[in-house]
Image (tube, rainbow, N blue to C red; front, side, top):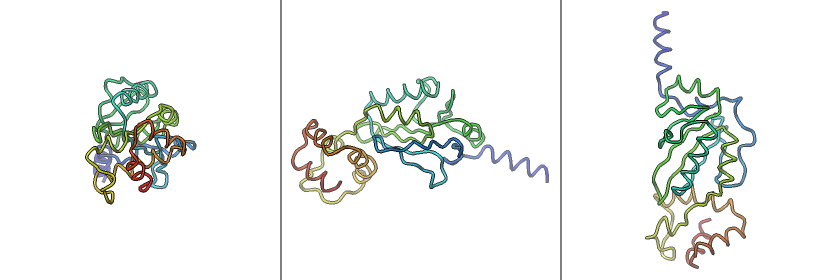
Length: 205
């Protein structure tokens, strides 16, 4: 019986952890979410004591994000890679459940960086208020639809679907709704939006 229990514990410690395993309830930041961009959405209702954000950024902005990660979590920027878990003075690229047990004692961040949509698709889950505040103050702006989808003709295109639907709903709309009416107009003017694209954005947002 004792042998079976030991084997059970060994198997438990080397299993692949779930996202919720990395974040402790007593580390959940109360002031993590607000309206500024990038948007961080609380996962508390799913039993995950952290917040999630997904957005697109340029190579320069990704470099700056890695610099912030290096400074905030005290890790070597060159070891961050494209996915993993960062915590106080450590990075794990292929974490096991036993790693999650230790990591949940600290503030941490699960990240994935992927080349996509003419930029870098950033997917983050974190319980670090300081990191969130730092990223929100970085002034990240999404690329415009006509650069991401240059083949799309807004005056002849119908419903959103496929990659466009994902990008529009998950990435563009949160960015657009984080802007005030004046900021939206300034953004469109600065990026030379055509009347057709203005109408397309207004209709789908």
